Image 1 (cartoon, rainbow, N blue to C red):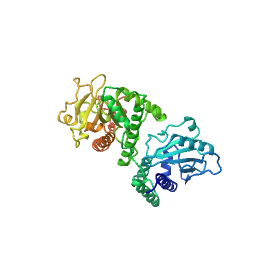
Image 2: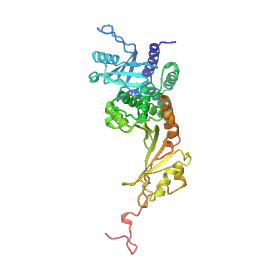
Image 3: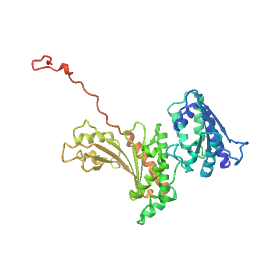
Image 4: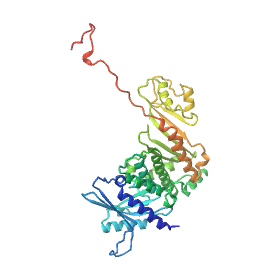
Length: 426
């Protein structure tokens, strides 16, 4: 049985070796951190880096990547952890200082922790150390997903490179590689639920609130990666620019939302779907909701026809488990029914004023068994079943966005005739 440190070294060495040999893989990884790789780009990778002439602490990063574009060089230390091994802030800060000292541009970590973007590192460090050295992060499953999509979408030209990627994928999927998905909320999840059950409240600045939000963000990222592997398309979190630029602002915003509304929310964009997939966990009611919002077709001039446009798309879906909500203009109240009710009654979504038409529809499914919401593991299991199989598989992939029809021909201005049948005079 290999020690954890030996497993880390073995896993990282295989990944780095493949990275240096398969240009499509290295290009995908570099593009993810905003660095472009062209045909002339060369990648060199090394493991167990030492600096024998350096005084002070004997630091030894797990790996080093050197990118030579022909016009310039960029380099990064790599630090890896597998299984339950955790990164330590002081270790990271030591590598950041070392990188600055020896002229390395970045420190990349690879662990089982999840981050919404490589720039959003899961471990807080002294911000002064990242002014001249970038700190970046990839979860192992984000790397596995990257490899999987390259193979699924036939983006690798050389057959030998395809073989290398498939072998790397097979290796990473083996239990001995130490990869883990996000499969459990932390103990703070139980603490927060118990607090609300007893009539208490959640403080937005408390360690419990921040931990719950952090775990929620990890689960959203893992869900996006799972949808990517299941669909063969790169699913991404929908983040406002402010949250994309500053992960701390995102955590504080979502912690405030948790404290004030007892809600955890997120949104995932799957390419070519009708709308983003909105995900919401209601802590007070102990349920999860998944939905999509679609604009109503503007070429339909009747209330019934707008509803029928949506219902027809879901003709093979279990109507009792799907909720349809119609949004109306102005202050008109939202209407809500099951899909089955909307099928049976064409007037299920109407307004007394027939000239008023629904502007958009929300298609929604809810967690079936609320009892599983409280469990740290069962919550994750039920949420993933709800989002991926129940909602995306049965609903989302069947929906299409409304598109305006092609304009119809009409008489050109010079073809308009007068009362005598001739061309109208100017």
